[in-house]
Each structure stands twice: as structure tokens, then as C-alpha cells.
Image (cartoon, rainbow, N blue to C red):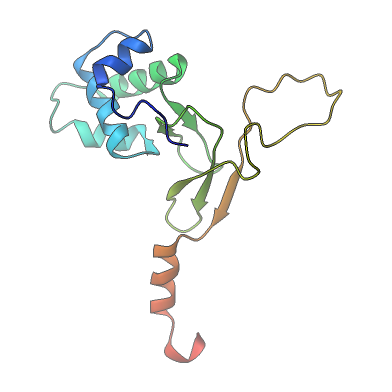
Length: 153
């Protein structure tokens, strides 16, 4: 399921999350729309040419505000920089390429949310369940196959 907020303007999304609308927040939000699973550095690199005067710290602050307000979700695959995504309205997981770091969404593997359960009696109140699949993406697989000598395939 994709988030049902895709048609809303950046201003509407920010106000709906209780956040003040600023040029930096609008630019960061639009950068995340254009590139799901973006790191803070990638977002900064994407907006600094069009929004002069914005600091990297301002981008980090905006992303943190988005996560705190439930507008964005921070995911932190082991060994990789934290990334942010706007898909927050469902229970989905991620697959990470071990070669290039590409991250894709994986819909809930076993039907409806929550699709994972902990043993009864644990005493925990679960807020989120995160599953990360690791593998080689189609692009990296094609590249490595093309680089192998003909007789070794």
C-alpha cells in the first residue's frame, strides 16, 4: 500500500503534521518525494544548488522534525547511513543491496500488519517491527555477470 498523501502539496503535508512551512522544509520534503530512501547528505546535495544558504544542519533538523512528527520514517540498515522515507502509513519492510546499498520497499510479507509477533508474555508493547532483507539487486547482479569471463557462468 502506498501512502495516500501523494497528491497533497508539501505545504499541506507539513501543516497536517503540525510543522511550520519553511523553504527548507518544503525543499527537503520534495527531495524525499523524488528520491525515497535518501540519506540526509543526499537530500542536502539535491537541494543546495536550488536553495542557497541552506546548511546541512538545517536539512538534518528538518528530517528529524519530519520523523518526530510522523511525516517521515528513518531506517538504519546495519553498516549503512540512516535513510529517510515518506512511506509511513503501512507496515512494510526493506531489501538492501549488499553491493551498492540500494534500498527498496517490500510489502508486508505475511498479509496485514502486524505481520510479525513476539511471544506472548514478553511484556513488550511493540511500536514497530523492522525486517531487512539483504541481497544483490538486479543492476549489480547484471554488472557482475557481464564482468565474468564467458566460460565461468
